[in-house]
Length: 575
Image 1 (tube, rainbow, N blue to C red):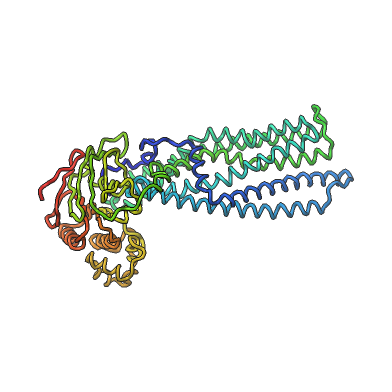
Image 2: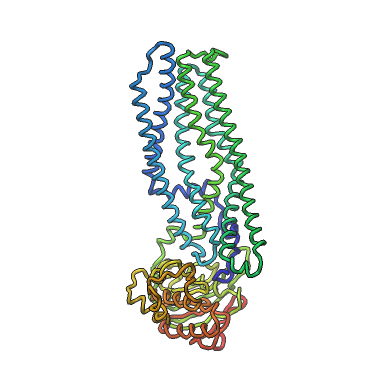
Protein backbone atom coordinates (compact mmCIF):
# COMPACT_ATOMS: atom_id res chain seq x y z
CA UNK A 1 0.00 0.00 0.00
CA UNK A 2 1.37 3.42 -0.88
CA UNK A 3 1.54 5.95 1.96
CA UNK A 4 -0.39 8.73 0.25
CA UNK A 5 -4.01 8.75 -0.84
CA UNK A 6 -5.00 9.29 -4.44
CA UNK A 7 -1.69 8.04 -5.76
CA UNK A 8 -1.36 7.40 -9.47
CA UNK A 9 -1.61 3.84 -10.79
CA UNK A 10 1.42 1.72 -10.09
CA UNK A 11 2.23 -0.12 -13.34
CA UNK A 12 5.35 0.86 -15.22
CA UNK A 13 3.47 2.85 -17.82
CA UNK A 14 1.84 4.99 -15.16
CA UNK A 15 5.03 6.94 -14.64
CA UNK A 16 5.27 7.96 -18.26
CA UNK A 17 4.89 11.49 -19.47
CA UNK A 18 1.84 10.52 -21.46
CA UNK A 19 -0.24 10.20 -18.34
CA UNK A 20 1.12 13.27 -16.62
CA UNK A 21 0.21 15.45 -19.56
CA UNK A 22 3.73 16.67 -20.29
CA UNK A 23 5.18 16.39 -23.80
CA UNK A 24 6.49 12.97 -24.75
CA UNK A 25 10.21 13.00 -25.47
CA UNK A 26 11.53 11.48 -28.66
CA UNK A 27 14.53 9.15 -28.56
CA UNK A 28 16.71 11.89 -30.01
CA UNK A 29 15.62 14.46 -27.42
CA UNK A 30 16.17 12.02 -24.57
CA UNK A 31 19.62 11.05 -25.85
CA UNK A 32 20.61 14.70 -26.26
CA UNK A 33 19.49 15.29 -22.68
CA UNK A 34 21.68 12.41 -21.51
CA UNK A 35 24.66 13.73 -23.47
CA UNK A 36 24.09 17.13 -21.90
CA UNK A 37 24.35 15.56 -18.45
CA UNK A 38 27.81 14.25 -19.33
CA UNK A 39 29.30 17.71 -19.86
CA UNK A 40 31.74 17.28 -16.97
CA UNK A 41 33.30 14.31 -18.71
CA UNK A 42 33.60 15.94 -22.15
CA UNK A 43 37.44 16.26 -22.02
CA UNK A 44 37.84 12.58 -21.13
CA UNK A 45 35.27 11.51 -23.71
CA UNK A 46 37.00 13.54 -26.42
CA UNK A 47 40.41 12.15 -25.49
CA UNK A 48 38.96 8.66 -25.77
CA UNK A 49 37.58 9.38 -29.25
CA UNK A 50 40.88 10.88 -30.41
CA UNK A 51 42.85 7.90 -29.13
CA UNK A 52 40.41 5.57 -30.87
CA UNK A 53 40.85 7.45 -34.16
CA UNK A 54 44.64 7.40 -33.95
CA UNK A 55 44.63 3.70 -33.00
CA UNK A 56 42.31 3.04 -35.95
CA UNK A 57 44.65 4.82 -38.36
CA UNK A 58 47.60 2.81 -37.11
CA UNK A 59 45.54 -0.36 -37.41
CA UNK A 60 44.65 0.39 -41.04
CA UNK A 61 48.25 1.30 -41.82
CA UNK A 62 49.44 -1.90 -40.12
CA UNK A 63 47.10 -4.09 -42.16
CA UNK A 64 47.87 -2.42 -45.47
CA UNK A 65 51.64 -2.38 -44.92
CA UNK A 66 51.54 -5.99 -43.72
CA UNK A 67 49.88 -6.97 -46.97
CA UNK A 68 52.39 -4.99 -48.98
CA UNK A 69 55.27 -6.51 -47.02
CA UNK A 70 53.94 -10.02 -47.64
CA UNK A 71 53.34 -9.39 -51.31
CA UNK A 72 56.71 -7.71 -51.83
CA UNK A 73 58.47 -10.66 -50.20
CA UNK A 74 56.76 -13.05 -52.62
CA UNK A 75 57.53 -10.83 -55.59
CA UNK A 76 61.14 -10.31 -54.52
CA UNK A 77 60.74 -6.58 -53.85
CA UNK A 78 61.45 -4.60 -50.70
CA UNK A 79 58.64 -2.06 -50.34
CA UNK A 80 57.99 -2.08 -46.57
CA UNK A 81 60.72 -2.55 -43.96
CA UNK A 82 60.36 -4.73 -40.90
CA UNK A 83 61.25 -1.76 -38.69
CA UNK A 84 58.24 0.21 -39.95
CA UNK A 85 55.93 -2.68 -39.19
CA UNK A 86 57.44 -3.02 -35.74
CA UNK A 87 56.92 0.67 -34.91
CA UNK A 88 53.40 0.81 -36.35
CA UNK A 89 52.38 -2.42 -34.61
CA UNK A 90 53.82 -1.38 -31.27
CA UNK A 91 52.20 2.04 -31.52
CA UNK A 92 48.82 0.51 -32.27
CA UNK A 93 49.01 -1.80 -29.24
CA UNK A 94 49.89 1.09 -26.93
CA UNK A 95 47.23 3.42 -28.34
CA UNK A 96 44.61 0.68 -28.32
CA UNK A 97 45.28 0.07 -24.63
CA UNK A 98 45.21 3.81 -23.88
CA UNK A 99 41.98 4.20 -25.84
CA UNK A 100 40.26 1.41 -23.91
CA UNK A 101 41.55 2.84 -20.63
CA UNK A 102 40.32 6.38 -21.35
CA UNK A 103 37.01 5.50 -22.99
CA UNK A 104 35.90 3.08 -20.26
CA UNK A 105 37.12 5.34 -17.47
CA UNK A 106 35.24 8.28 -19.01
CA UNK A 107 32.12 6.15 -19.46
CA UNK A 108 32.14 4.88 -15.89
CA UNK A 109 32.45 8.46 -14.64
CA UNK A 110 29.65 9.61 -16.95
CA UNK A 111 27.37 6.80 -15.75
CA UNK A 112 28.15 7.70 -12.14
CA UNK A 113 27.13 11.30 -12.87
CA UNK A 114 23.97 10.03 -14.55
CA UNK A 115 23.01 7.84 -11.59
CA UNK A 116 23.55 10.72 -9.16
CA UNK A 117 21.39 12.96 -11.37
CA UNK A 118 18.74 10.24 -11.62
CA UNK A 119 18.53 9.80 -7.87
CA UNK A 120 18.50 13.57 -7.30
CA UNK A 121 15.69 13.97 -9.86
CA UNK A 122 13.74 11.15 -8.26
CA UNK A 123 14.09 12.75 -4.83
CA UNK A 124 13.38 16.33 -5.92
CA UNK A 125 10.88 15.85 -8.73
CA UNK A 126 7.19 15.10 -8.79
CA UNK A 127 6.31 12.46 -6.18
CA UNK A 128 9.69 13.04 -4.48
CA UNK A 129 10.02 9.34 -3.81
CA UNK A 130 7.08 9.48 -1.38
CA UNK A 131 5.64 6.17 -2.51
CA UNK A 132 4.46 7.06 -6.00
CA UNK A 133 6.85 4.88 -7.96
CA UNK A 134 7.25 1.12 -8.08
CA UNK A 135 10.53 -0.05 -6.56
CA UNK A 136 11.05 -2.64 -9.30
CA UNK A 137 10.57 -0.05 -12.03
CA UNK A 138 12.95 2.40 -10.37
CA UNK A 139 15.51 -0.38 -9.90
CA UNK A 140 15.22 -1.26 -13.57
CA UNK A 141 15.76 2.37 -14.60
CA UNK A 142 18.64 2.93 -12.21
CA UNK A 143 20.47 -0.31 -13.04
CA UNK A 144 19.44 -1.72 -16.42
CA UNK A 145 18.47 1.44 -18.28
CA UNK A 146 21.43 3.49 -17.06
CA UNK A 147 23.72 0.52 -17.72
CA UNK A 148 22.37 0.23 -21.27
CA UNK A 149 23.40 3.82 -21.92
CA UNK A 150 27.09 2.97 -21.67
CA UNK A 151 26.69 1.73 -25.24
CA UNK A 152 25.74 5.23 -26.34
CA UNK A 153 29.40 6.24 -26.19
CA UNK A 154 31.32 2.98 -26.35
CA UNK A 155 29.23 1.23 -29.02
CA UNK A 156 27.81 4.08 -31.07
CA UNK A 157 29.68 7.38 -30.79
CA UNK A 158 33.22 5.98 -30.81
CA UNK A 159 32.60 3.40 -33.60
CA UNK A 160 30.67 6.02 -35.60
CA UNK A 161 33.59 8.45 -35.40
CA UNK A 162 35.94 5.66 -36.47
CA UNK A 163 33.69 4.73 -39.41
CA UNK A 164 33.51 8.36 -40.51
CA UNK A 165 37.32 8.41 -40.63
CA UNK A 166 37.68 4.96 -42.19
CA UNK A 167 35.44 5.70 -45.20
CA UNK A 168 37.52 8.54 -46.70
CA UNK A 169 40.78 6.70 -45.96
CA UNK A 170 39.48 3.56 -47.68
CA UNK A 171 38.14 5.46 -50.69
CA UNK A 172 41.32 7.54 -51.04
CA UNK A 173 43.65 4.55 -50.87
CA UNK A 174 41.62 2.49 -53.34
CA UNK A 175 41.05 5.51 -55.55
CA UNK A 176 44.78 5.74 -56.17
CA UNK A 177 44.51 2.37 -57.92
CA UNK A 178 40.99 2.46 -59.41
CA UNK A 179 38.27 5.11 -59.08
CA UNK A 180 35.54 2.60 -59.91
CA UNK A 181 36.82 0.15 -57.30
CA UNK A 182 36.98 2.93 -54.70
CA UNK A 183 33.39 3.99 -55.41
CA UNK A 184 32.00 0.44 -55.28
CA UNK A 185 33.86 -0.58 -52.13
CA UNK A 186 33.07 2.77 -50.51
CA UNK A 187 29.36 2.26 -51.21
CA UNK A 188 29.48 -1.21 -49.68
CA UNK A 189 31.31 0.14 -46.63
CA UNK A 190 28.75 2.96 -46.20
CA UNK A 191 25.96 0.40 -46.42
CA UNK A 192 27.60 -1.83 -43.83
CA UNK A 193 28.62 0.94 -41.42
CA UNK A 194 25.72 3.39 -41.77
CA UNK A 195 22.73 2.12 -43.76
CA UNK A 196 22.31 -1.33 -42.20
CA UNK A 197 22.69 -0.05 -38.59
CA UNK A 198 20.22 2.77 -39.30
CA UNK A 199 17.62 0.42 -40.75
CA UNK A 200 18.00 -2.14 -37.99
CA UNK A 201 17.82 0.62 -35.36
CA UNK A 202 14.54 1.90 -36.81
CA UNK A 203 13.01 -1.55 -37.05
CA UNK A 204 14.13 -2.52 -33.55
CA UNK A 205 13.06 0.67 -31.76
CA UNK A 206 9.62 -0.57 -30.71
CA UNK A 207 11.02 -3.97 -29.74
CA UNK A 208 13.71 -2.33 -27.62
CA UNK A 209 11.08 -0.30 -25.78
CA UNK A 210 8.94 -3.38 -25.16
CA UNK A 211 12.00 -5.22 -23.90
CA UNK A 212 12.75 -2.46 -21.38
CA UNK A 213 9.19 -2.54 -20.08
CA UNK A 214 9.24 -6.33 -19.92
CA UNK A 215 12.40 -6.26 -17.83
CA UNK A 216 10.90 -3.66 -15.50
CA UNK A 217 7.68 -5.69 -15.17
CA UNK A 218 9.70 -8.80 -14.30
CA UNK A 219 11.64 -6.92 -11.62
CA UNK A 220 8.41 -5.53 -10.18
CA UNK A 221 6.89 -9.00 -10.08
CA UNK A 222 9.94 -10.56 -8.44
CA UNK A 223 10.16 -7.83 -5.78
CA UNK A 224 6.44 -8.18 -5.06
CA UNK A 225 6.84 -11.94 -4.83
CA UNK A 226 9.75 -11.72 -2.37
CA UNK A 227 8.40 -8.78 -0.37
CA UNK A 228 4.88 -10.18 -0.04
CA UNK A 229 5.82 -13.83 0.45
CA UNK A 230 4.23 -14.00 3.90
CA UNK A 231 0.84 -12.80 2.63
CA UNK A 232 1.13 -14.91 -0.52
CA UNK A 233 1.66 -18.06 1.50
CA UNK A 234 -1.06 -17.14 3.99
CA UNK A 235 -3.62 -16.93 1.18
CA UNK A 236 -2.25 -19.89 -0.74
CA UNK A 237 -1.54 -17.74 -3.79
CA UNK A 238 1.96 -19.02 -4.55
CA UNK A 239 0.93 -20.61 -7.83
CA UNK A 240 -0.99 -17.59 -9.11
CA UNK A 241 1.71 -15.06 -8.25
CA UNK A 242 4.46 -17.30 -9.60
CA UNK A 243 2.53 -17.72 -12.85
CA UNK A 244 2.52 -13.94 -13.28
CA UNK A 245 6.30 -13.83 -12.78
CA UNK A 246 6.76 -16.69 -15.22
CA UNK A 247 4.58 -14.91 -17.78
CA UNK A 248 6.71 -11.77 -17.43
CA UNK A 249 9.84 -13.90 -17.77
CA UNK A 250 8.47 -15.56 -20.91
CA UNK A 251 7.58 -12.18 -22.38
CA UNK A 252 11.12 -10.95 -21.75
CA UNK A 253 12.64 -14.09 -23.28
CA UNK A 254 10.41 -13.79 -26.36
CA UNK A 255 11.50 -10.19 -26.85
CA UNK A 256 15.15 -11.14 -26.48
CA UNK A 257 14.70 -13.87 -29.08
CA UNK A 258 13.16 -11.41 -31.54
CA UNK A 259 16.08 -9.03 -31.01
CA UNK A 260 18.51 -11.91 -31.48
CA UNK A 261 16.93 -12.72 -34.85
CA UNK A 262 17.22 -9.09 -35.89
CA UNK A 263 20.86 -9.17 -34.83
CA UNK A 264 21.43 -12.22 -37.02
CA UNK A 265 19.87 -10.46 -40.03
CA UNK A 266 21.97 -7.35 -39.41
CA UNK A 267 25.21 -9.28 -39.02
CA UNK A 268 24.45 -11.32 -42.14
CA UNK A 269 23.83 -8.14 -44.15
CA UNK A 270 27.06 -6.55 -42.96
CA UNK A 271 28.98 -9.77 -43.60
CA UNK A 272 27.68 -9.96 -47.16
CA UNK A 273 28.71 -6.34 -47.79
CA UNK A 274 32.21 -7.14 -46.55
CA UNK A 275 32.47 -10.29 -48.66
CA UNK A 276 31.24 -8.42 -51.72
CA UNK A 277 33.94 -5.78 -51.19
CA UNK A 278 36.64 -8.45 -50.89
CA UNK A 279 35.32 -10.09 -54.05
CA UNK A 280 35.57 -6.77 -55.91
CA UNK A 281 39.19 -6.35 -54.84
CA UNK A 282 39.96 -9.87 -56.03
CA UNK A 283 38.27 -9.11 -59.36
CA UNK A 284 40.40 -5.98 -59.62
CA UNK A 285 43.52 -8.06 -58.99
CA UNK A 286 42.42 -10.32 -61.83
CA UNK A 287 41.81 -7.33 -64.09
CA UNK A 288 38.11 -8.07 -64.62
CA UNK A 289 35.48 -5.48 -65.59
CA UNK A 290 37.93 -2.59 -66.01
CA UNK A 291 39.06 -2.92 -62.40
CA UNK A 292 42.71 -3.56 -63.17
CA UNK A 293 45.00 -3.20 -60.14
CA UNK A 294 48.60 -4.37 -59.87
CA UNK A 295 49.24 -7.52 -57.85
CA UNK A 296 51.24 -5.68 -55.17
CA UNK A 297 48.63 -2.93 -54.74
CA UNK A 298 45.81 -5.50 -54.79
CA UNK A 299 47.21 -7.34 -51.77
CA UNK A 300 47.58 -4.10 -49.81
CA UNK A 301 44.05 -3.06 -50.84
CA UNK A 302 42.70 -6.45 -49.80
CA UNK A 303 44.21 -6.24 -46.33
CA UNK A 304 42.98 -2.64 -45.96
CA UNK A 305 39.45 -3.62 -47.02
CA UNK A 306 39.29 -6.52 -44.57
CA UNK A 307 40.44 -4.29 -41.69
CA UNK A 308 37.99 -1.53 -42.64
CA UNK A 309 34.95 -3.80 -42.69
CA UNK A 310 35.95 -5.41 -39.42
CA UNK A 311 35.93 -1.99 -37.79
CA UNK A 312 32.44 -1.34 -39.21
CA UNK A 313 31.04 -4.52 -37.63
CA UNK A 314 30.79 -2.77 -34.25
CA UNK A 315 28.30 -0.28 -35.69
CA UNK A 316 26.18 -3.06 -37.13
CA UNK A 317 25.82 -4.61 -33.68
CA UNK A 318 25.21 -1.17 -32.16
CA UNK A 319 22.35 -0.49 -34.57
CA UNK A 320 20.35 -3.24 -32.94
CA UNK A 321 21.02 -1.78 -29.50
CA UNK A 322 20.17 1.78 -30.57
CA UNK A 323 16.44 1.19 -30.14
CA UNK A 324 16.96 -0.12 -26.62
CA UNK A 325 19.27 2.81 -25.86
CA UNK A 326 16.69 5.32 -27.03
CA UNK A 327 13.99 3.68 -24.91
CA UNK A 328 16.36 3.53 -21.93
CA UNK A 329 17.24 7.21 -22.34
CA UNK A 330 13.56 8.18 -22.36
CA UNK A 331 12.79 6.07 -19.28
CA UNK A 332 15.72 7.62 -17.39
CA UNK A 333 14.92 11.20 -18.43
CA UNK A 334 11.21 10.77 -17.64
CA UNK A 335 12.06 10.79 -13.93
CA UNK A 336 12.81 14.51 -14.15
CA UNK A 337 9.62 15.26 -16.12
CA UNK A 338 7.35 17.72 -14.43
CA UNK A 339 10.05 19.02 -12.12
CA UNK A 340 11.09 22.67 -11.99
CA UNK A 341 13.55 23.96 -14.55
CA UNK A 342 17.00 25.17 -13.56
CA UNK A 343 15.90 28.78 -14.01
CA UNK A 344 12.88 28.23 -11.78
CA UNK A 345 15.03 26.63 -9.09
CA UNK A 346 17.45 29.56 -9.13
CA UNK A 347 14.54 32.00 -8.76
CA UNK A 348 13.22 30.24 -5.64
CA UNK A 349 13.95 31.49 -2.13
CA UNK A 350 14.58 30.03 1.31
CA UNK A 351 11.62 29.15 3.49
CA UNK A 352 10.46 32.03 5.74
CA UNK A 353 10.71 31.85 9.52
CA UNK A 354 6.94 32.03 9.94
CA UNK A 355 4.94 28.80 10.10
CA UNK A 356 1.43 30.05 9.32
CA UNK A 357 -0.01 27.82 6.57
CA UNK A 358 -2.86 29.02 4.37
CA UNK A 359 -4.49 27.34 1.36
CA UNK A 360 -6.98 29.27 -0.76
CA UNK A 361 -9.02 27.81 -3.62
CA UNK A 362 -6.63 24.95 -4.29
CA UNK A 363 -7.46 22.63 -7.19
CA UNK A 364 -5.47 19.46 -7.63
CA UNK A 365 -5.56 16.11 -9.42
CA UNK A 366 -2.85 13.52 -9.97
CA UNK A 367 -3.23 13.51 -13.74
CA UNK A 368 -5.47 15.18 -16.35
CA UNK A 369 -7.30 11.89 -16.87
CA UNK A 370 -8.28 11.54 -13.21
CA UNK A 371 -10.95 13.40 -11.22
CA UNK A 372 -10.13 16.36 -9.01
CA UNK A 373 -8.89 15.47 -5.55
CA UNK A 374 -9.35 19.06 -4.35
CA UNK A 375 -11.76 21.50 -5.93
CA UNK A 376 -11.40 24.87 -4.27
CA UNK A 377 -9.81 23.66 -1.01
CA UNK A 378 -9.43 26.44 1.56
CA UNK A 379 -7.63 25.76 4.82
CA UNK A 380 -5.97 27.89 7.50
CA UNK A 381 -3.47 26.50 10.00
CA UNK A 382 -2.08 29.18 12.37
CA UNK A 383 1.50 28.99 13.59
CA UNK A 384 1.83 26.60 16.52
CA UNK A 385 -1.65 25.15 16.01
CA UNK A 386 -2.42 21.48 16.47
CA UNK A 387 -4.96 20.39 13.86
CA UNK A 388 -6.40 17.12 12.62
CA UNK A 389 -7.36 16.39 9.02
CA UNK A 390 -9.99 13.64 8.97
CA UNK A 391 -11.73 11.69 6.25
CA UNK A 392 -12.10 8.24 4.73
CA UNK A 393 -9.50 6.61 2.49
CA UNK A 394 -9.15 8.23 -0.93
CA UNK A 395 -10.58 11.59 0.08
CA UNK A 396 -7.22 13.32 -0.32
CA UNK A 397 -5.80 13.58 3.19
CA UNK A 398 -2.36 12.41 2.21
CA UNK A 399 -2.55 14.31 -1.07
CA UNK A 400 -2.65 17.40 1.14
CA UNK A 401 0.61 16.27 2.76
CA UNK A 402 2.14 15.81 -0.69
CA UNK A 403 1.15 19.38 -1.64
CA UNK A 404 2.56 20.87 1.56
CA UNK A 405 5.83 18.98 1.06
CA UNK A 406 5.97 20.18 -2.56
CA UNK A 407 5.87 16.58 -3.73
CA UNK A 408 2.95 17.56 -5.93
CA UNK A 409 1.89 20.82 -7.60
CA UNK A 410 -1.67 22.20 -7.57
CA UNK A 411 -3.44 23.19 -10.78
CA UNK A 412 -4.81 26.41 -9.31
CA UNK A 413 -5.11 28.29 -6.06
CA UNK A 414 -2.68 29.65 -3.52
CA UNK A 415 -0.61 27.83 -0.91
CA UNK A 416 1.51 29.93 1.45
CA UNK A 417 3.91 29.28 4.31
CA UNK A 418 4.60 32.30 6.48
CA UNK A 419 3.03 34.48 3.78
CA UNK A 420 5.35 33.12 1.06
CA UNK A 421 3.99 31.06 -1.83
CA UNK A 422 5.19 27.48 -1.40
CA UNK A 423 5.85 27.32 -5.15
CA UNK A 424 8.46 30.07 -4.65
CA UNK A 425 10.29 28.19 -1.89
CA UNK A 426 13.11 25.80 -2.66
CA UNK A 427 12.11 22.21 -1.93
CA UNK A 428 15.14 21.45 0.25
CA UNK A 429 14.59 24.57 2.34
CA UNK A 430 10.86 23.83 2.67
CA UNK A 431 11.51 20.28 3.85
CA UNK A 432 13.87 21.54 6.53
CA UNK A 433 10.90 23.44 7.95
CA UNK A 434 8.37 20.62 7.55
CA UNK A 435 9.02 17.12 8.90
CA UNK A 436 6.90 14.16 7.79
CA UNK A 437 6.05 10.96 9.63
CA UNK A 438 4.01 8.62 7.47
CA UNK A 439 1.98 5.49 8.02
CA UNK A 440 4.67 3.51 6.16
CA UNK A 441 7.87 5.12 7.43
CA UNK A 442 10.84 3.10 6.25
CA UNK A 443 13.61 1.94 8.55
CA UNK A 444 16.79 1.13 6.67
CA UNK A 445 18.80 -2.07 6.98
CA UNK A 446 21.41 -0.30 9.07
CA UNK A 447 22.13 0.70 12.65
CA UNK A 448 19.79 2.74 14.83
CA UNK A 449 22.38 5.52 14.75
CA UNK A 450 22.48 5.62 10.95
CA UNK A 451 18.68 5.62 10.76
CA UNK A 452 18.46 8.56 13.14
CA UNK A 453 21.20 10.56 11.42
CA UNK A 454 19.23 10.44 8.19
CA UNK A 455 17.13 13.31 9.53
CA UNK A 456 20.07 15.34 10.86
CA UNK A 457 23.58 14.18 9.90
CA UNK A 458 25.33 16.63 12.25
CA UNK A 459 23.46 15.51 15.37
CA UNK A 460 25.57 14.73 18.43
CA UNK A 461 25.32 11.66 20.66
CA UNK A 462 23.36 13.70 23.20
CA UNK A 463 20.96 14.85 20.47
CA UNK A 464 20.30 11.25 19.47
CA UNK A 465 19.56 10.13 23.00
CA UNK A 466 17.32 13.15 23.63
CA UNK A 467 15.28 12.36 20.50
CA UNK A 468 14.99 8.72 21.58
CA UNK A 469 13.98 9.81 25.07
CA UNK A 470 11.36 12.21 23.66
CA UNK A 471 9.98 9.34 21.58
CA UNK A 472 9.85 7.16 24.72
CA UNK A 473 12.13 4.51 23.23
CA UNK A 474 15.49 5.38 24.83
CA UNK A 475 15.20 2.61 27.45
CA UNK A 476 14.58 0.04 24.73
CA UNK A 477 17.70 1.12 22.83
CA UNK A 478 19.85 1.17 26.00
CA UNK A 479 18.88 -2.42 26.72
CA UNK A 480 19.95 -3.59 23.29
CA UNK A 481 23.37 -5.31 23.18
CA UNK A 482 25.00 -2.66 21.01
CA UNK A 483 22.85 0.34 21.85
CA UNK A 484 22.79 2.92 19.07
CA UNK A 485 24.97 0.65 16.93
CA UNK A 486 22.43 -2.17 16.95
CA UNK A 487 21.61 -3.34 13.45
CA UNK A 488 17.87 -3.02 12.75
CA UNK A 489 17.59 -5.39 9.82
CA UNK A 490 15.54 -4.81 6.69
CA UNK A 491 12.51 -2.62 7.45
CA UNK A 492 13.45 -2.62 11.17
CA UNK A 493 12.49 -6.28 11.46
CA UNK A 494 14.40 -6.70 14.75
CA UNK A 495 11.99 -4.32 16.51
CA UNK A 496 8.30 -4.58 17.24
CA UNK A 497 5.89 -2.40 15.27
CA UNK A 498 5.50 0.08 18.13
CA UNK A 499 9.25 0.28 18.77
CA UNK A 500 9.97 0.79 15.08
CA UNK A 501 7.39 3.56 14.89
CA UNK A 502 8.99 5.30 17.88
CA UNK A 503 12.43 5.08 16.26
CA UNK A 504 10.90 6.73 13.19
CA UNK A 505 9.34 9.38 15.44
CA UNK A 506 12.73 10.05 17.06
CA UNK A 507 14.23 10.54 13.61
CA UNK A 508 11.48 13.01 12.75
CA UNK A 509 11.89 14.91 16.04
CA UNK A 510 15.65 15.08 15.51
CA UNK A 511 15.14 17.34 12.50
CA UNK A 512 13.85 20.08 14.83
CA UNK A 513 11.45 21.18 12.09
CA UNK A 514 8.83 23.61 13.45
CA UNK A 515 6.04 21.91 11.45
CA UNK A 516 5.20 18.23 11.75
CA UNK A 517 2.94 16.33 9.36
CA UNK A 518 1.86 13.08 10.97
CA UNK A 519 0.24 10.95 8.27
CA UNK A 520 -1.59 8.07 9.99
CA UNK A 521 1.40 7.67 12.31
CA UNK A 522 -0.19 4.90 14.40
CA UNK A 523 -1.36 2.67 11.53
CA UNK A 524 -0.79 -1.02 12.26
CA UNK A 525 -0.51 -0.63 16.02
CA UNK A 526 -2.91 -2.23 18.46
CA UNK A 527 -5.36 0.03 20.32
CA UNK A 528 -3.32 0.38 23.53
CA UNK A 529 -0.01 0.90 21.69
CA UNK A 530 -1.71 3.44 19.43
CA UNK A 531 -2.99 5.47 22.39
CA UNK A 532 0.40 5.34 24.12
CA UNK A 533 2.08 6.48 20.92
CA UNK A 534 -0.34 9.39 20.44
CA UNK A 535 0.12 10.48 24.06
CA UNK A 536 3.85 10.59 23.41
CA UNK A 537 3.18 12.77 20.38
CA UNK A 538 1.13 15.16 22.47
CA UNK A 539 4.08 15.64 24.79
CA UNK A 540 7.03 15.87 22.43
CA UNK A 541 5.41 18.10 19.79
CA UNK A 542 4.62 20.92 22.21
CA UNK A 543 5.33 24.31 20.63
CA UNK A 544 5.33 23.02 17.04
CA UNK A 545 2.69 23.21 14.37
CA UNK A 546 1.19 19.72 14.17
CA UNK A 547 -0.95 18.45 11.29
CA UNK A 548 -2.38 15.06 12.20
CA UNK A 549 -3.83 13.15 9.26
CA UNK A 550 -6.12 10.33 10.33
CA UNK A 551 -9.23 8.34 9.52
CA UNK A 552 -10.53 8.77 13.05
CA UNK A 553 -9.60 10.12 16.47
CA UNK A 554 -8.97 7.97 19.54
CA UNK A 555 -9.78 10.65 22.11
CA UNK A 556 -6.27 11.07 23.50
CA UNK A 557 -5.13 13.63 20.90
CA UNK A 558 -4.53 17.21 22.05
CA UNK A 559 -5.96 19.38 19.24
CA UNK A 560 -6.90 23.00 18.63
CA UNK A 561 -9.19 22.35 15.68
CA UNK A 562 -10.41 19.57 13.41
CA UNK A 563 -11.04 19.64 9.66
CA UNK A 564 -12.97 17.07 7.66
CA UNK A 565 -12.28 16.57 3.97
CA UNK A 566 -15.19 15.81 1.70
CA UNK A 567 -15.93 16.50 -1.95
CA UNK A 568 -12.57 18.17 -2.47
CA UNK A 569 -13.16 20.77 0.26
CA UNK A 570 -12.46 21.11 3.99
CA UNK A 571 -15.06 21.84 6.63
CA UNK A 572 -14.49 22.61 10.28
CA UNK A 573 -15.67 19.88 12.66
CA UNK A 574 -16.37 19.83 16.35
CA UNK A 575 -13.67 18.44 18.60
